[in-house]
Length: 64
Image 1: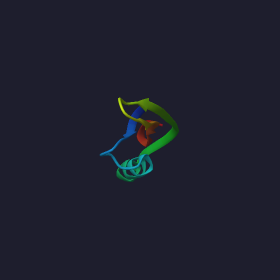
Image 2 (image 1 turned 135 degrees about the vertical axis):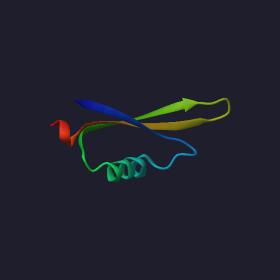
Image 3 (image 1 turned 90 degrees about the vertical axis):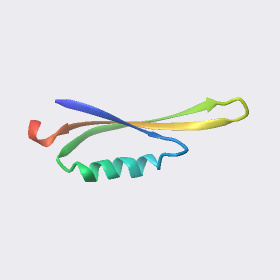
Image 4 (image 1 turned 180 degrees about the vertical axis):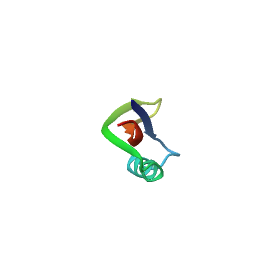
């Protein structure tokens, strides 16, 4: 069964790469099928900032 997990990078969250690598290290039985990265520019009242997220598509090794 294909599953997904989303990671978001923000002011309080660490870099997306670190989040994904940490998650993969905790789940060595997952097979990563694909990672979709996305960046958007969001307008705030006084500034613009970049919002980054990643969708990880994976499946568990036992379900292959």
